[in-house]
Structures are given as structure tokens and as C-alpha cells.
Image (cartoon, rainbow, N blue to C red; front, side, top):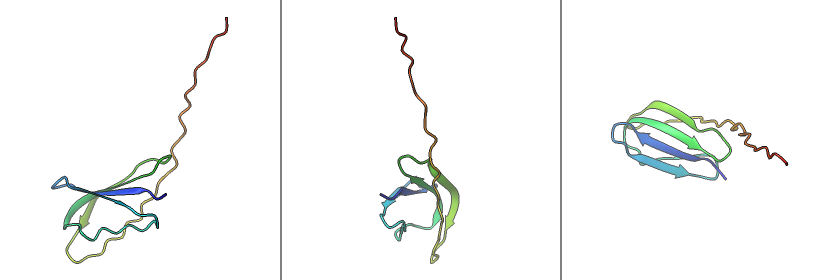
Length: 81
């Protein structure tokens, strides 16, 4: 399963989620503006890229990477009587 990538237009607050299996994400309907891109996948840390400027007639390529999340050690100690 691929990561979920979201483009957030910082001026309008409009978010565009995209989920592709191939690892290549296309968002042809984005309007020009400044964006924050977020990539999420279970078991990985969230990746955030801010202040990405998209202009008319340009093709933008971002290489987003996700790092493995550190396991959270949660344990309880039971006292035996």
C-alpha cells in the first residue's frame, strides 16, 4: 500500500488528498499558489514539505521520503503477591 499524500493550499486552506499505488502521485487540478505537502503511511513518521510554490504551466517534482517510526515501548509491570 502506498503513502497518502495531501497538498494543502496555504492561502485558501483547500486540501487535495491523493493516494496512488505506484508511488507516483499526480495532482493536475492544483491551482497556482503556495502549498504544504504531507505524506503519511502507517508505521512511518509523517513527512511535511512547506512553502512549495506552484506556478502556471510548470511541472513540479517533489521527492518525499518517509522514515520508520520508532516503536513505542509501552509495558506494564504486574506485581505478583
